[in-house]
Image (cartoon, rainbow, N blue to C red):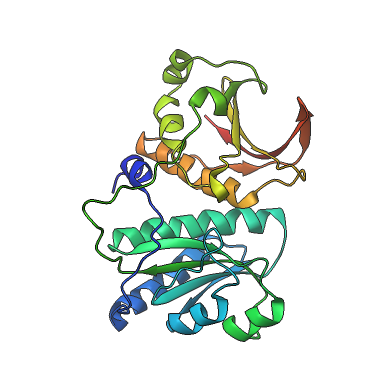
Length: 270
């Protein structure tokens, strides 16, 4: 699966067949979850697979969901944070989205569901007393057959010129320069990465040898670290598609420009 084509066509599925996955498939998914946890060696988050999706759905219906509507699926995967720091929040989202790509390769559909506002006691009742902090779960399963006459909603995407700057926020960068340093295709396809409420808060500052990832904060001056992790994952995968296999290094700091607060997230060496 080419990650650029995947990004353009990526859709969250809201309608699933009730039929659960075969036990062998679920066993393979458990192995995949463990592999992803082991790949991130900090051990500060854990994937939890819940086979009985009906139990989770019944407990969260009317309380949580995608844009306020709970998604019914045969199975769910919870993302349980054992530590609530920036690094854990960023990389747990990174690996959750990596999991999405792996599940779609198995011809399964997925949908992120926000549960951070659900009562803690209810979450422990649904996900287990031993859980720590669960802000997101992933619905997954076999998708229902699409109506061939239905139209997929179109999500407006910001342009590269609104997302990428040269040396500082607001400084225009040319397509010719991005092509020269091998980043034109990466940023073109990165625009299609998913983000919470489709706010697309990523901003990039490019210099001659580095790329800095920043997150545009919301009205409460809070950065979406989940969106940061997702952007980092797809940027690395898109660069790998062109033969560059570097990794991000996390940064700290923030600044305000034009009344908008930005948080530094990470640095990528070109």
